[in-house]
Image (cartoon, rainbow, N blue to C red; front, top):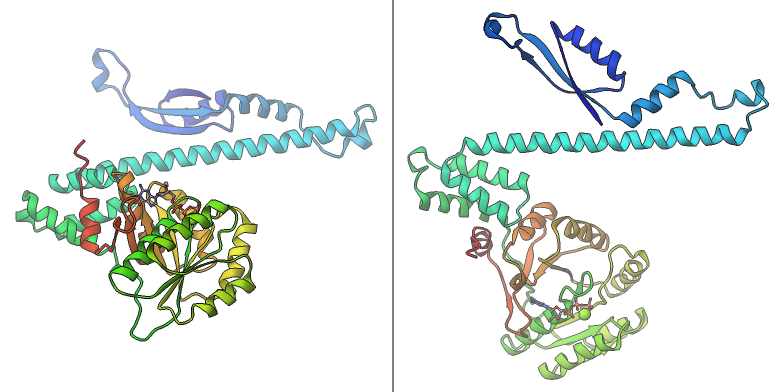
Length: 392
Ligand SMILES: Nc1nc2c(ncn2[C@@H]2O[C@H](COP(=O)(O)OP(=O)(O)OP(=O)(O)O)[C@@H](O)[C@H]2O)c(=O)[nH]1
Ligand SMILES: [Mg+2]
């Protein structure tokens, strides 16, 4: 990349100079006015300064291209000395170059958008009261996405009475109130009176805590609420996976079936028809593995669950969470469980996800202990978590 400044008495002249020297592909990075140096500079007429950039590799190749234009198919007629393959290679090269150019432009566009967003952010935040600026920092440190954090603090600022803008407690209350509005009421599994055979599928990527969460829920429902619970596992890929659930089932003293195909699934569901709740544990799926997703879809079509719960770990990056959600949502998702809250101090992923996907949270899990480390979060609890400062 070559970057150069051109100064002239007006914009047209500066542009002409730039084009002559840098070529037609040059991009303007900046324009402004300058005065010539020296004692009398203050009284002199301002001049126009433009800063332009050009990709140097592009300049050479485009100059060459202008000197030796490529006419893809004319050579086979006009010149027999050049083999056709050479011409094709030239076309392929020029296509490759064009793609590189487009990629480069795309990258520059992204940089400019980022710079614009940064400038907008600085200006926007500078105009807010100090307490709101502090909350913005807390949200960002909690990994709330920038655009969402800006939206939130903008509402907070608008709601904060002007005579209370320096009152930290007022600002905090308004912030908590605003954040709560981004969360709907938690929707834990509920079993209506007389309802039998409620079928709940637990799905999600590998290792997020599906089996452990089923064990926590089954134990709580059986011990605390006196419900009759059964579990079915479709995770037959690893012997240890079925054994893990079997061990929990034995401790809780509930029946378990290991199911290998859709026929067995139908049978097991019928068998447990008189139970209050049937959990179906599924094998961890890479959402990018179409074959696995298809298999899961078949089980869901046959099972016809009352609820499908997607289990996500808060230790997963927000963008990955969104991709995972999109893939799993093709089989239908009713609720979300976020796990491993004990493994992070930033909870922005939760807000970023529910804001984007608009699905209720059923539970949060906060550790490996079965059955204790599970909670039903209300919106105030979630809002408080997001305003927690990392004391470290
Ligand atoms: N720290 C922490 N660990 C958890 C939590 N929930 C589950 N785990 C741990 O995460 C690991 C994986 O848990 P599993 O329940 O086997 O996860 P899974 O989603 O069933 O995994 P696959 O069946 O392999 O896809 C285990 O070591 C669990 O103890 C949690 O809330 N916090
Ligand atoms: Mg499992």
